[in-house]
Image (cartoon, rainbow, N blue to C red; front, side, top):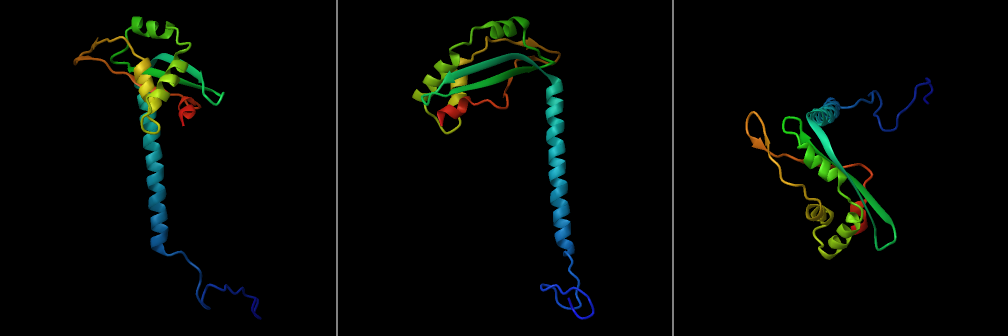
Amino acid sequence: MTEEGSVVHPLVAPGRTRRLRPWLIAVIAVVGAIAIAATAVSVTLAVVRDSRYTTNVTLSLSYVGDDGRTYSCTYDYSTPNSAPMPAAVAQEMNERDWSGTGQRMYEWAKAHRAAEGSTWGLAMDEFVRFPPWQVETSTRSTHELWSRERPGSTCEDGLR
């Protein structure tokens, strides 16, 4: 403090106040606005996609790794509402006995190593096969299938 009772800031020259530069404020505002907009777009697209698709098949897989730990994962398979999966296909996949499939996939994946993070996906392609189907829509004959791994799935972790 000075004799007059004012506070002295060591990094600010006497007689000058401490202020952020206007360009810095503008940059921070623009970056913040872009981040908020990107988040809003992502959330909107996820909601729109989820409202236009129906989950038809859910598969739960598990295996015991060489380290003795149990790894598990769950996948949801969805089709667009405009081209739904035939009920017979969904029933066949949901009623199939998937027990032991995760262990077979793990053993196969160990013998067929690929790039980091892609080995389990290749095993999924090898072991999870849907019967073929086509759906007639107002515009064309189509077949569309989306898959999504549920959060908390650990199947890929045992291959690292």
